[in-house]
Image 1 (tube, one colour):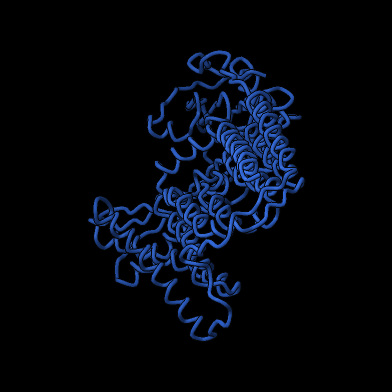
Image 2 (image 1 turned 30 degrees about the vertical axis):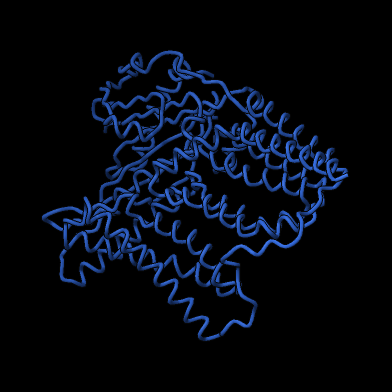
Length: 507
């Protein structure tokens, strides 16, 4: 009888290993790209440590996991299907975060399917850490980075003025006269906030189980990190040697140590004001293993088969329907005419490093002029597939605001019937620009709408047309004393180039 029991247990163990290997095969490309990004992106490099922390927590809970009876639940298939649906949608929308966050969701579904709610509850926090390790979507990063750049710039300017330094603040550029201090995206303080929040969550798990105290600790980290980062930027203005090299990196570590010390001190203070009467928090050493491991239910096989079937189905969908084809230009932008109606153009080229950051496959940048008219700048960026760019939905206003331009007005207008475009009216120290821009998404014209609508269109077109190509068209002209003349100028120029675009961008 004992031999028969061991044979059954070994069979289920082997089936579980096959299930785990199936998950690895399904998510291998996603996990490899994630590891590469975490290793090269300083904003999220802390994410490389979280899987090890998660594994350590599983180790601490292992004796309890062995004692807990496994109660498979068919609802796990629904969670797995949700994860696969998110994976497929992310692939079609070329949105890395969706494909990555689907992994812990899919794992949660497998744990519920094979182990039940008790097993899933025991491993909930390790799974949460797998979500915290994921880099945020580019849209969210862009929305957070620019405001933090401006806040850090303003606070640093306040500190420098308090020290008696005369300066001129233009967006994220602090002009000290003898030199300029630019608060770039890397100095926005976002990397400190994200890494400190991840560390704070782990700290609260071990040392603070009161919900309101933990929330207060995590919230307090945000202003602390912003203030510390602004002080660091101000210090760079006083001591230029801090702007690069060892001292630059060391000052960043000081911010981290300062904020972590602040977290520990605030936690001590909260516990001093209201001592905890609850049981000790999370265990810091594995619980003694008592008793034999929980027995696997005899009816476990159908759940394993269902899990494997879901993995096979998911792999089929992901790597067929979820892999849009690349759509190159019909012809190179080198053939784009530089004589357009009354306009004569001259092509200009980006710095290769700047072009690389756009993730575009090809681009056109040209300045056009016409007698007795202000010049018009034309920029077109084309992406054969959004998979390589991680999904776009780019707003040119974000690129210009960081260099000191302020948005006076924004919205949508038309350069001709049924040709809607977005527009921006920008100002910097009295100089004004008018910007028109629109997208050509899988061959379809449209003004850039909200990110959610944009992603939805990309998913639908990915299913219907099996493509996710995208292009941005942007026109810029100066505004002197006549804003309407600038609008008419861009509308007239736009009407001239619109018929040319189908010669290059596939419809």
